[in-house]
Length: 289
Image (cartoon, rainbow, N blue to C red; front, side, top):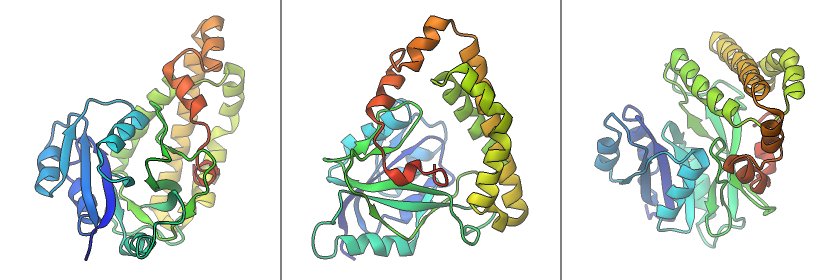
């Protein structure tokens, strides 16, 4: 089939065991694939290069910064972002192809469902409802937020199109891998927290039950059986621990430091998040955040 005028970009580190599956889901129909590797110590670079990708090594710039760097390496204006553990399904590919069939796409950005696949399974649970993110867009008009912690596309009020078919997200290799990833993200979030200590303390009382309900019922992990129960528990536990570490970090700072960060002036991160507040509405909805 003819290739679309789309550059797919992937940021990666130590993903040699699964990045090929991601690449092969788009290679037949996108114009180019750019892999930005943040100094992997495994065979990620070799695997990506062997799959026909253009591979660039870049020291880690933060989640948003790394993706903005990757955007700049693409030769096409329309870009598709995938993580190294995500796979475009045939149905999603057909939807994207249809957007470019006759004229330019109607919207400047398109969001899509990203559905979680549990370890040792091949498909999401029934009625999955995990995340919805803008991943296909015209980089001349919208781009990723320049943020250390967050990686969301800033749409600046532009209408966002909706793609119905999902990408599959093979997010974690095992539950130990999930806990490790969440622990790393938790420390990063705590370091850059801006909420006040009293607010965080109040949240601790309800954080676990609210998030367990959010994942198990709201995101329908009850359809995942034992895996769904375990996943919801781990996620709720992580959210509680994150708030605890945020509260501890905030409580240990002087009042002047706390006020500075709360106003978004104490760090580059605070300023970047203030400037990038206008993200896709669906990405901010509680069931998709």
